[in-house]
Length: 207
Image (cartoon, rainbow, N blue to C red):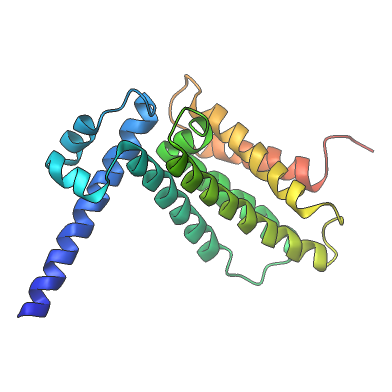
């Protein structure tokens, strides 16, 4: 009976945390870090303000948790998708496809992740966000390293190559999300995937 009660309490706590993070993602992405208030997030998540501060001691900590949780989810989803024995070039295209589609699908996190890294957030929160970005770049670097080791990719600097890949995806996905035409559709995702894959796999110059 006691164990059941503990498990129920834990589940309720996790549910509240998820509600808070979902509300925070939406409001942070719409209004930006500085214009968002904890009162708004508590109201949107349908939790008491005390509950909000119990889980996240400050707006900065909640902001960092929002980005970190979102990027961890994206990496986990990409890892699951990449569990295959495809030839490397198809594996590489799948990596780009998964990353881009998830960036667009998780539009709230992408907007925050790309736009808010230098917006006056306190140092602890900024460090958390930078750490998850480094982790994501490292995740991409591992895939590129595999391609180099198998002879599919040129022996370029892996750190710079991973940074370049992430930078291109960041820029194109964020531009699409800011487009006045509205939320991205499958065609928009396909266009970005084809463009990035062509640039990285075969280049822009004929001949």
